[in-house]
Length: 255
Length: 242
Image 1: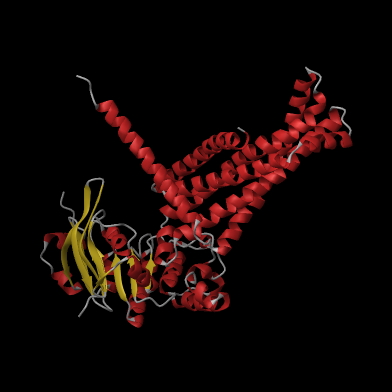
Image 2: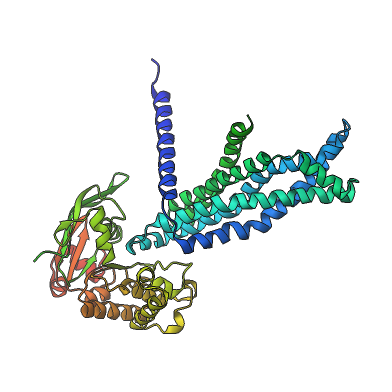
């Protein structure tokens, strides 16, 4: 006799995943359609945007510099080293700027959001908000979601420029490009859609990062272990979510 | 007389384990009710079900005789204050901003701060505390700041969740006196949950004991001291029968 157990287990797991996806989607959509608490929104813009600038900038600088070295040495194999500035600019704007910027923000921000909200959960601060007639979503979730959606594209834009400057430094200091030739090579092949698509990716990655932090923070388990787990899952899910969304968006924009 | 607040046949289970098994409890306007019971008997869950922080499996909460709905709960919370066990002050706000959290929306910054400083003075904290962050406060100061926040908007109903847990006897006595004085002065209806028998004797007009998920016994403090019920007798004297 064939056991129905594997089918039952698979069905139950699928239902569980569908229920979770539905809950997260409802959580996100309800939070996005609220007016954020203004003070908290400004605080989060500074936390997520301004304070992430050093780490995103340094990441972009080294990535642009390394990409320049790789593309030049790879391009030289078929006498195409001269296209390196364009490859760096397009690579940074379309792919590496948003993805690496998003990942650095995920590491820095998703963890901090999950830890902060998770600690508020276990110390009853979220219950206190309710008893003070304040909606925890409007005070905690909505400002973070909108701040990340706005701040991450700005970080990506700045990261693109810094990444191209990283390539320029390497190109002009060690690969024999003149400054004018490098910059001309960068801009001549770069199209506005290359930049805009990267900024749009940044907005989606910002949403993924903040949503992951808020979701796992709000649903943190008890005690320090619960907050620790929430922080870990927030970063892991945000990072994997960024890669998955990047694949989907790249297919949508350039497929 | 209509009860200020009434729990009617509240039931709540977690993962198949029954915590509240039909709790019926009413508190009259201006009365100070203290709920006692061993750890894990559902005292905190009862408060959370009344507040809507937990959804009961069945039963209802009545406020001034009418069931609390989503709409009426918002009005109920507008006239409500709560002191949490760990004070639950918001880490990112200063003490005065915590105390005036609700008032800042209606009064503006300056007036809200003035009221916050007055309320802090009422609980024995000076104006120098107003601009500190909660992390800089001792446990007793945080509890008093939490109490100031609970009374900041002159609530008609106040909940006190384990108000003296973690405090030394002197600070606990101070908190107990403050609670009794505030409840008497303001005429607010109060529900306190505690294990601390000193708190019970200082604060209670009436005592209810939770056991087995239900209200096992209730009466005033004198009746509690004279009670022959074994659960009550053992609990108030701290007698353990192995």
